[in-house]
View (cartoon, rainbow, N blue to C red):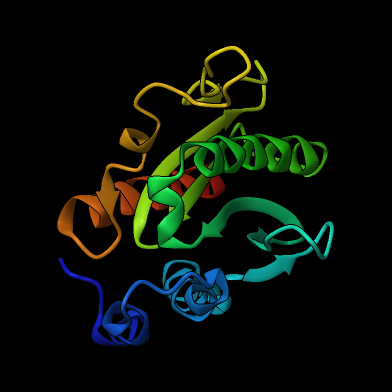
Length: 178
């Protein structure tokens, strides 16, 4: 089932541009997507968390004050820059650590978005493990092997939609059992 028209329409302006390099152009579309997936009527709240003004914002979905999902957004040009993708991976891991003390669910799902390309992450609260594993870099080069392959789905295509919905459904099932 494709995203509803209001979600698709929110992405239209950035998709019509010739490769915007401003990640902030993607904030409104992803915020619209999160509001659709996690409706305020179900006690979800999307919060932009700025740990440091020089670092990109993180959209954290909270329920009754506890994080249940988050997304970090990078501009699409980062897909062609291995060092930027390695840094995006590090930022995701840093955010899991920052949020972990406030978790009340066994698994925290998250999304790293580079433009509309996505990589889904999970954090297991019991073991402290993050999937996928950290990007291995060549010693001293900052370059990883096959790094861009992690962002192998597109939020605007059926496979990307299915992956996101599977993570969101897992979050909601977990919350319902709690």
